[in-house]
Image (tube, rainbow, N blue to C red; front, side, top):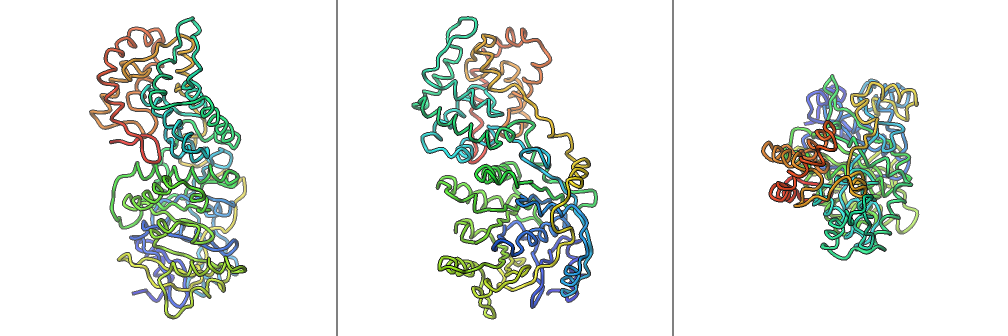
Length: 543
């Protein structure tokens, strides 16, 4: 039963974490938190109110203690961090719904791949994995195959792929006709890497050259700033503030949208990371995190079938991790049917039908709702005014409710962008201030390959890479305690080795310790390395 006093009901439900009041038509419309992880879809033409609906939902989730992540394409969503202004039309709309407009603001963390208007967001090359990186680089099947070979060689040789120069160095190393002597005149120090690469198939210079050129394109688009360390720890998205409200994480994406493929692949990487890192929780009373994916059509445009299958799998299964994914796009037909069927909570703003193709799109949008005999859904979609929407949410049993026409409630926080001064003040008081702001260039594949070419490091044997005995002992510790480092970066053994080697002389590490490592590497390093398998979308996945 829906309470008659909307204001009291909304405040009570927001406080008890049961429902979110979205708006009102003939009757109030509520989004039940217990099915908030069953995903959703917000659609409508430009200028019809999608961003406001997104903000209302984000405020409701945050008020209920659910952390939120949302991509902000136009900058309008940043206003959620500041107290709303009681403008006349907002007060009137709230009054028409039986509410009293109460200005509010929400704890916000800004993120920016380019590190200009938010904290930098970084991932390692290994975390991204060959499938997503191939998508980002727009590679064909043959080129993607060579990229897979490069990742496999890196795994087998203990070469951490952190930034773009690591991948460039490795690609140069696996080219078959690139043999060279080391600086001290010894035979080709990279022969073992090249031989390993050719063992997985024919790696041609032309194919590697094409990948290198695509890396340059990605670098020119700002990709070099995205790959590196410190890499993003997803637990930093899963925060609540001191009042128990969920933190609102906003990805500043106005500049990122100039590279649509980078934008879409980055958000897909985040989804895959959440899917692989979070534990199974089934259907919790409220989501652990809600993820808003704006301009969602970019994710599916020209995606190969293998990637589409993985996207469908992640969307279908991430629900059991307590994550709700809400796609925001102009038309439901932008989303493939296999994914659309997983999106239970729907908000449809106006669509305009000026051409036969538009009319088909409107009809298709109407068919995605559970019919209401009182409404001509297709006709109403074309008649909706700004701020109006057709909605159908899941009830507590997970059954779609009949479509209803509503006016979306006004947001409590500011509508529209914030000023640079306000943004700076928020970043200065951010809970992650200083954690990601300075890039770290740790020793990885590029540095290891350069050392080999300089004759300072002998090629490793037995799959032990350049880690030596310290890395193998660390791997044993990680295996015993189940504490591999964060997926896709370095193993615990590699991290221990890297930290320890910084505190001892190169002579010791390169001499006695490395020699001991060779004798142990075959039996321990190889087996531990093979115990890690590459994940479907990202880097390494615990078996």
